[in-house]
Image (cartoon, rainbow, N blue to C red):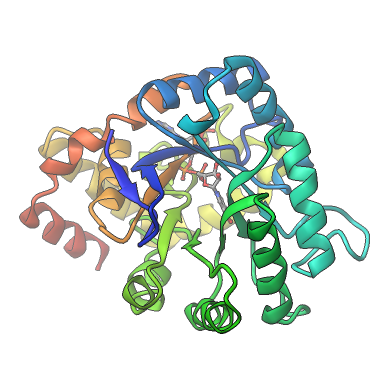
Length: 320
Ligand code: NDP
């Protein structure tokens, strides 16, 4: 495993990590979730990603029980939560001081840990001033309940503003973003956040590196039984992704598959290795519905050398 600094912080995060969205407490059993986490940990993965929204808190409960059962030393792993979608009443949503603090306490209980290594604002909240959220996060850091805080899918200018306020008030600034990043979704990581890597030392923990499975090629000939897009509760995702396939992504995935085969790499590993090539990516959060996928995906680091300058150029031509 390779360990990368989370931006300019001192925290070292495994280049490949593992997250709980869709799968934990929904698509797979607790036993399989444990097997996935163990496969990731045994391969050197040290970061497990979660959120209050995943299966309405149940994903964190599963992860907490697995962490407890395995007995892994707390120093050897990093665990996260995200705040935004916590429930249906007026103050269980968003980034108000009240919800940021209450959601943190609830996540600590569900994950059965004393502190969150990483705590993300899951989306920007137009109904809360950034100042309020920055101060609430600063307090959690000062109390030792959160070690590093960050954002997910915020605009670069808002992250810069949060960092400016934090510096002015001597409270902990945002340290990392969690954007979508893969062969098809590049703007935030490559353009919007570009000035922030140097100016505030932003790290990135990127999500959906396989575009929910699209970049494995499995959806090019329909929706396989038991796959993510076959889940009735994710029909909205199936509709979105099927539209992008019709709009030209299917042909691109096919061409990428041929290029991957030519360089002797399976397409999932190729797509993950492409993400790993970007030095501004601190960690690629992988997802899996079974442990065998984790084992396969964590081999992507070996594929990075195969993505030479020439191969990277050909990828650009395919995506153009
Ligand atoms: P991916 O895009 O990598 O999709 C993962 C899914 O693809 C798996 O569950 C599996 O689905 C399929 N898959 C993975 N590996 C393989 C393989 N080798 N062969 C065939 N199929 C494979 O990542 P996710 O979308 O799961 O995102 C990763 C993590 O990022 C999440 O768990 C979460 O922690 C985080 N995230 C954060 C978001 C945010 O807003 N901050 C939003 C979304 C995710 P199946 O077997 O069902 O086909």
